[in-house]
Image (tube, rainbow, N blue to C red; front, side, top):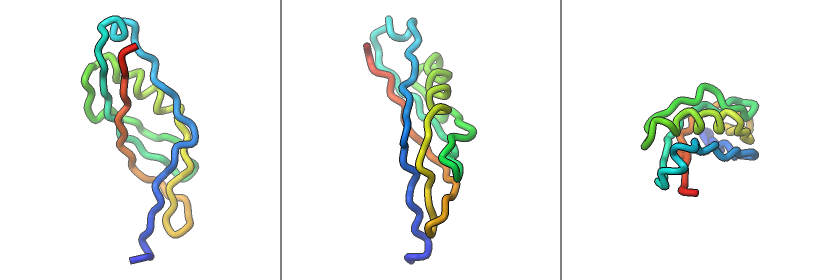
Length: 93
């Protein structure tokens, strides 16, 4: 079925999330899974947290993802919007 080839979006700019001081001092690592739409222009739309290991990491993850830019997904050569789910890792400093 060559007529339903969708190329996934490709990140062209990613921004690392800010790590809250309270979390950085704890010395642990964290993970926030974020779901969003990459629109036809490559912008992030409607990011939401799917799950997270620490509630204080959710806002920094969403703030960072909103600044990301993508080369949009393409279907049959035309830009299309697609849903994306990605993990944002917070490593120990």
